[in-house]
Length: 166
Ligand SMILES: [Cu+2]
Image 1 (cartoon, rainbow, N blue to C red):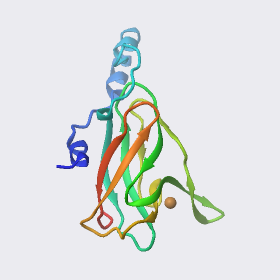
Image 2 (cartoon, protein in one colour):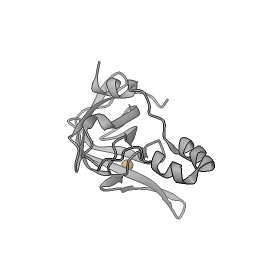
Image 3 (cartoon, rainbow, N blue to C red):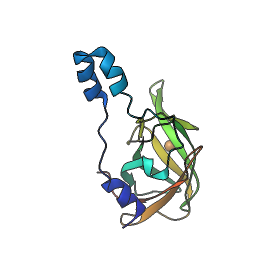
Image 4 (tube, protein in one colour):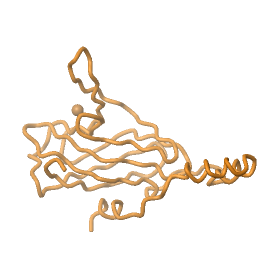
């Protein structure tokens, strides 16, 4: 079982928002402390507190590749994704797709800060991880290895399958 599988199989933690809203209706004062999930001081996120869901890489046609996944910070402190490394390519950059004068363009997002329970969602025509200078073609059945480097938490290694668009 790959690391990616382990992450994918982790039970998804439900956001507390709905619960908090209900409490606010009942008693505003009581809810203020009830909504604070973690009364202790923020700690450095552990690798286990990053959840990666729905990862896939598009089969490549040339030297560029596109990878999509959703990354969620389940820790109680903010952290920053500063770099992604891959043995499959010369470089890996997170790109944003933006429309300028009717033309779709890609722009590197640089470092990405994720607050507790915040997620970075990637999808075709939106945010994606671009692999630049592929060292071999990405074909269905193969995998892409990624190492996510954070400012605070230890690196997270993931294996992502290459497949046709789901
Ligand atoms: Cu791109």
